[in-house]
Length: 132
Picture 1: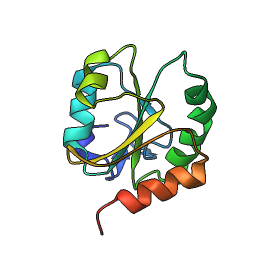
Picture 2 (picture 1 turned 180 degrees about the horizontal axis):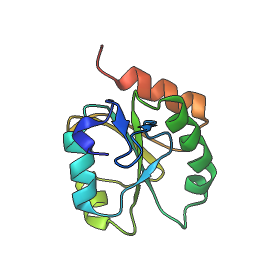
Picture 3 (picture 1 turned 135 degrees about the horizontal axis):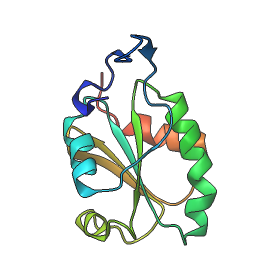
């Protein structure tokens, strides 16, 4: 799926079956993947900055899965491992994790640190989005 077409319908190249929108968090493993997604996606992105050693990050991970499933086609949930991408963590001034950052068309709309249940994450995200 091309980032700039997220929110549109996709079909399998072989069987032409319609593919569902991303309904799970997307692990971004490089700065190029992060830039491609956050700069080109027409959908808002909720980025979870996390680390493997962080207990609260592990605790909240299933909540991000729920938020991604609830918002499939309306927003994207992405995950950035701050240990694997320290330059990106520095660029976003990540000083506490887990940290959620809402981005739309490359611009930061809001941020919130700390673990919380899916309902509160979704509320934070929806309050941060520009009016439709």
